[in-house]
Image 1 (cartoon, rainbow, N blue to C red):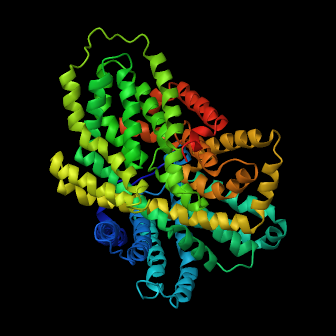
Image 2: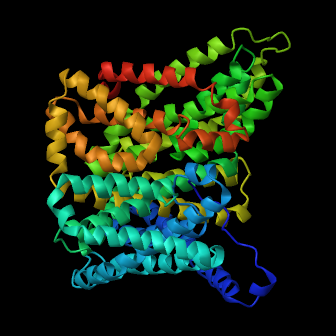
Image 3: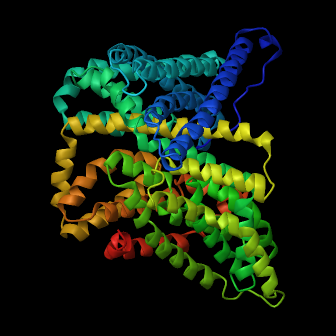
Length: 628
């Protein structure tokens, strides 16, 4: 599976294409990319300034700026849609590439053509409903800004229009006429088949849900269509062919999903994680831990686990966490004779362990879509992550029991003290974030900007490691990841709404309520289901789709909402970082520059330890809710 921003695809031009259609498409593609990246980067900076200004004006000057949240929300939808375009250009949308990479290159290119055409179909289908939605919202006034809401929601129309152009340009740039004709035949044939059996699909009720949300989604995801677009085309097709509902409701649900004020912190925390790596804060933290326990058997494994626990509590981005820690530790761990597969296994499972450490994006996401207190989730996630970390420590100790430590010496006290003093400013960051939230100085949304400002201050003044030339690429990466995540949030919100309106949620509640074993049986099924869903669907899409449906069932069975949320996140994390389908596993291997084959059979003891830890967390609710 592919996720995160990469270098934009730029196909080589044949001599005959130098002044032809592909050449023009490539240059238009690049022009759109330059524009969207620049505007998106400006919005990220503006969002940081606006939200931080709200904190300063309220707490320092006792003069709240009442318009900051509304302006931040206004700009955030524009950021999400521009990010969608940037991610589409850079192949940054989350998608499954297993089948495409497995088949022969000829079939892989054809799958890519079909997938690109599905993306084109979705963005073209949504343009008219988006226009209707914009027309309806132009008569709604934003309270504090005093302008029409149409100026905000037109971002949906603008973003989808640019996405349509980019998708068509990519077809021109990379697809042969033969592959394009075959792709049109497949997409057109499937569309025609669904249209001809429209009456039967409507009469099937729940059967139509299986056709659209299982068969169609599985087909699209399998051939490499980005998950967000797979959800979107399935939802649009279901509503158009099996219901009488207007398609503008899809745009309405997407707007509602992406405009949640709590999600404003997503780009800020992503940017924070990238800043941490650039300013060297993660490196000095790791150096302190190495000096402290690097001399014992498996010491660097413990350092890696401790570093991931600390870094995850700051950045909120798993990719940023791994990228900050692995380059610092892996060279020394290799020198000490640790197997490369062991390193990738530990990196992947430590990332799964840290999914519940605040301010994890998954915690923010599940809180926003299920109306569970994010502050409570932040508090409830720390102990379960510690239990998971200790389970990994046991495996790391067992694996290192025969390690030769005769050539290692304990670091002198002055070295430990010196590395601690150097790392201390960075170590204060999670406490600063926590202090601002607990004292009510900043909201869960605003506190991300406090972290960004504090990290920038440390990089400029304390560590003197601040490369201004890297800021713009970091901002563009933030824009792309924000767009990729938020489009999934939007289309998954629309898909979850369609499932709810169909009566599926009530049916699911009745089935889950009748599970043998009562509460214990329900939690057991939840663990198994989300491990599988986390592996197949990615973490955030799985939570967005099934979290709002299953949380009411958990409440009806007496399971605390924070406890259930933590169980879901940990189970999802295990699936996300477990081979053969978990994208996190391959991400860890890529960041560590290690072949997945080296880690495939070494990771399972660590996965087993995480499952045991999850069972312990599920069995003892106090670990999640004891400090609420």
